Each structure stands twice: as C-alpha cells, then as structure tokens.
Image 1 (cartoon, rainbow, N blue to C red):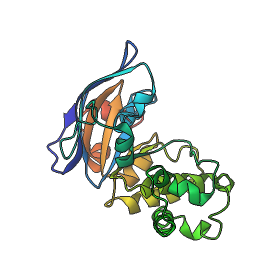
Image 2 (image 1 turned 60 degrees about the vertical axis):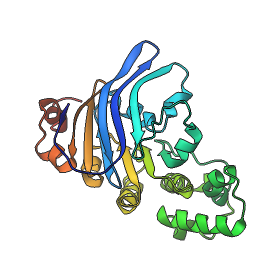
Image 3 (image 1 turned 180 degrees about the vertical axis):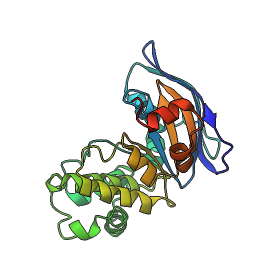
Length: 259
C-alpha cells in the first residue's frame, strides 16, 4: 500500500486485517489509522471491500455467521475491539452506523431518537427531551419536525429519514460515525443537505464514509482510502489522492480508466 508519512491523532488503528466469508477472502492485510475528528472517505469499485471494511470497525460483520477475522483493530485507548471480553453492543454505542437505506423504526420521531437511550435504561423525560432537541438540531432536522415529534417517522421524506437516522446515532453519544453510502438513495437536494451535515459534524465526531461518488469524497473528506480487490491500495490526504496519487492504480481509478 502507498501511504505518506501523515501526522494525525488516530482514534482507531487497524493492523493486518484479513476477513473471510467462509473460505473466500474479502480483505487482505489492511493497515489503516483512522484520523480523530476528521472525515475519512473509502472509495473503490463495487465489491472491492470498502463496505466490508467499514463494518469491521463496529463488528457488524459478527452478525453474519460465516465471517472470520484475523488481525487487530484498536481504539485510541489501546482496547482491542475484537477481544473476547469486549461487548459488541457497547462498542456500537461508541461507533455508530448509518446505512445506505435509511431505516427508521415504525415509531414516532421522538421514540426513534431516544431508542438507544431507553435500551440503556434512561427514561427521565427531561433528559430525553433535551437529547431529542440537541440530536435533531445536530442532524439539521429540528426546525422541520419539532411540531410533529409524536408523528410516525415513516411519514418523513427519504432525506429527512436519513437525517433522523443520523440523529438517532448521535443521541447515544458516539465517538465515531460510520456511513455506508448514506446518499445513494437520495435526490441531489437531500444529498447536499447530508453533505453539509457531514461537514458540520466533523470536528465533534470522527466520520468514516463509504461512497461511490468521487466528487462527494473530494467535497466532504479530509482523508481518502482507495480499495481494490480487498486491498487498501493507497491512503492519504484527500487533496493528495485526487490531485497527485502515488499509486498508478489509484490514478487510473480516479481518472475513470477502470471501475
């Protein structure tokens, strides 16, 4: 893999990550540091391993029975997230996930936001009210829904649903937000709102986004990793990747020669 000497404070360190679906290997010896309070974009052609890698960061792949993983992923405090004593549910509070297709629960807007807190045993109305307002404000949705918090979340538009899912993720106080192609099902106007939101959330959260849209990667991210056939080919500052990549494969992909 081509990587500059980049100086930043990592929130996560990935070392020697191999992943197998049954006997088929999908990731090969991936090494990457995830920069704290920055946006990292993962790009590459379909089936290159970027979403698989993203799901490794909060152990979502554990939910698929036939997956085996080798290597190490450590938080900045040295905790190995795959240690057998590590609670995956606790990890997922710390490392939230926003999926490609928005997935609000068939509940009110209010109950969607507080869902994770209720599971954690928080039921104080004043606390929940404050979290709902602050989370929806952070997700740039409060002004649009503040008068209908008791209405079903399923009545929202696609873009609003995706921002509600972001509000639900931030409500439990995560450190990291993983976004798996969060705009792929949205129209250009809704996509622009999500991109603006990512830029606003940067600095408070560490964000890792998988995107097929290279213009989006160049607009919203500070760092970019290019995956190809299960390998991390190059990782660098986004500007460097898009203007002067060190690896020929990266350049060929960026310039549209394949992919």
